[in-house]
Length: 189
Image (tube, rainbow, N blue to C red):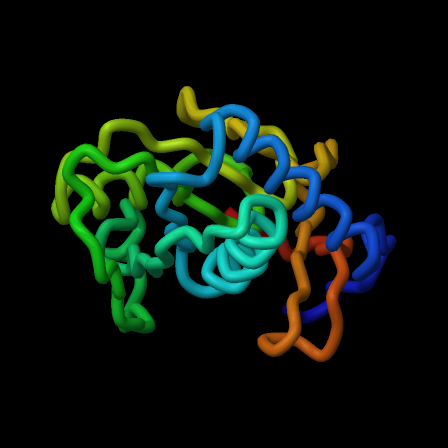
């Protein structure tokens, strides 16, 4: 990313753990327990966060929600502009029809990733409900999408990139703001 530089670390690993624990409690409370909840992470970092969320729900309720992962590469509205999208395997080992889904992603920005994920989910079945959990909501929505569960709201500018770093994908756990300078192509979504 050329001249990008780290501007601030707004959540460290402990803060992220507390946020996941809080979100797990909120999910259990809203759904009156963990029975019937299925957690699906949007590949890549959403999948890692979904695993952590399922582990926390299991600690609270003694029931581990069924887990899945969703690749939205071909559902993105910018797929035509990409030369070769990176493909990962969607893994949803359960029936979506009538299920209560908690969809997990790292950063909510314009809403386009979530819209793509909803389109992808509907190709696998018709859930009873879909709730959205994100580690960071940075605003700047372009579509009418909002998260049901948010680790942290992080107001940011378009000249910034909000990055969620997660082990084992990254060498540490943190939420960081990077200044993109003149390079405005970054920004998690």
